[in-house]
Image 1: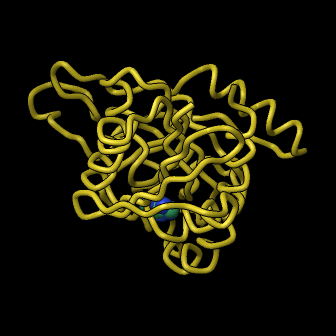
Image 2: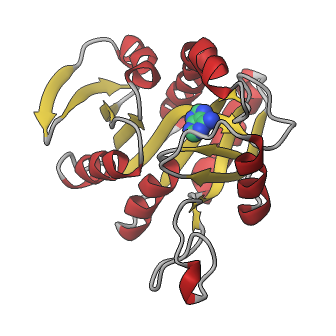
Length: 229
Ligand code: ADE
């Protein structure tokens, strides 16, 4: 299978590149794409840079230019659900854009005409992930992830996102990647390991735990690749 694995930051894909061994590098539209074979699959791996616009470009490139048939996202997130602690894993069941706002026209937050508030992740990939989690002896939370072009370091904003979208975690790329895959009918899976609590200490916590949490997520994603038929 031709599998795309993307992150947003170099730290999120470095552990993947270490695991796959030899890879080729190709530049396209201002980003580097790394191709390799692993566990009988063709992989294309890239980090997009932070945010919805760059992640849209990278996801689209992976599907359209590199022909990926499935997309796995590996990275870190801020927790909303207090049960999510640093290093814990969450798989998105569905994703929404928390900063998309045309409520002035009577629409709900996260909605634009002809779009939808939530994009659902692929159920088969989620059930594969559950198998991987039990084999690895890890807990995997399933939940709603909210995405926006904001690093959230504010308890009030965190709580608003949690209340408005029923979200368990927040980050800056998942929902845009989800929109691309949904539009192109490509199954996708968004995994995040918690790096911070999206509160006033978030930037310090993020800096401290980005690397270790990114490794947690990447290790899990590699095991998923090994499981994909
Ligand atoms: N990714 C990880 N932590 C985050 C936060 N607090 N806000 C937005 N994206 C994040």
